[in-house]
Image 1 (cartoon, rainbow, N blue to C red):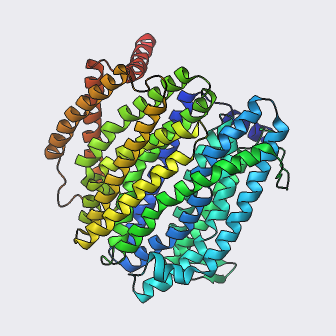
Image 2 (cartoon, rainbow, N blue to C red; image 1 turned 180 degrees about the horizontal axis):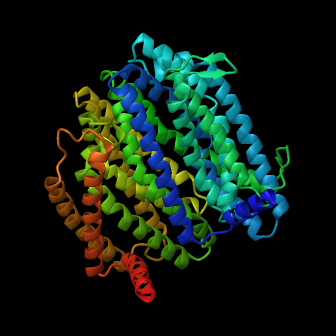
Image 3 (cartoon, helix red, strand yellow; image 1 turned 180 degrees about the vertical axis):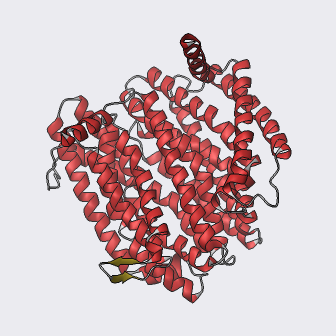
Length: 542
């Protein structure tokens, strides 16, 4: 009976979702994952940023190369190259080819990333000393090397879960795909709260604890993510084959698309390697400070840009044969992302002190100042995710890659210049912002020029201008709200700052929604329809 109930729950969770519900689910799950990430960072920063900055810098540096290998080999590269080809087989009713493609990609990625993980373990010492952490002192270097060898398993485990989740995403299943990142953070939290105290089994002390316990939690979280992803396969009918079908046309097509997107991902992550290297020379805590500001800056990108773009992507791939339908869907996605992200960016800028307080008890001036330089990059990167998918839907991975090369080259050049000028971590933030804006502008210009019919019409630009007006008014309100509810010297706890942040955010968002309604923006209509439905439902009950 319990087995039957479990299968029923899984089957319900694996139901195909519409774009609207998929976007909501992905945004909510990303929010949950982000909140868990905030708790994770808050615990880490509270334990180590002030008391052991060398240790927390070492932990941060240890992630760099394993994450780089995952991004360059798998990550979003697989999703945007695999999903269109996989969808073509399913739409044509050729399930045999689709499962051969899936098995081949899964086996190939697992094999490649396993080799990469082993190589990282072997060469962790020179990678830390000469590539990502040359500015760390000797104790921090040794700690980073040991941590990197533990975290090195991540590319292998992540590649497996990514392939499995991409299959689910392609057919409109998003529940377990959405749960995977949250489960990963839970694993890290277990490492922080339990493994750092040591691991004792039947009286045998097999691990002494300390910050190395966090690295063990990272590996444990990656294992949990794979398990959750596998549950999402229930009912899909996946016919796994322990072979690589080199003759499968879909597999060959996918391999042709994969290199450009993989290099695009890798080039983008080159920023992280350079910033880690440069910030390791800027004093203890600077490396962690920049990474934390970057994490805060990326949260809205994941919540808004990635979630909405991921939900729209399958539909974009289906409408490539009709330019009119494709353009309409793309404009809808771009308008939605713009409308949602603008107030978030504005509020984040003015309330940055409150935001930083969430991940560091008592706040941190360095993190807040770096974060301020990156809020425009947040908006640009939200737009980037739908702009790049406009190319990927047409199976063009080369154009975004070339654009990334140009943007990353500009960013790295500016980082080196700003660092030599003594601008510190804030200079790295400004360099990243300029590069992000340049990248998204180039992509949108190329997309518009390729369209036979205008991609961005007068109606679109009129809506964008009205959104900008609403955002400016929201900014003014957010500024005065922070003055009305300022951060005090004794606001050193989450409970002291969270209510103030909520009031500032709610009032500012309410103003934004009201101004959007006054300016006749269609994006606000579903919001008012939902509010009206709730109000009238309550009235009917009375």
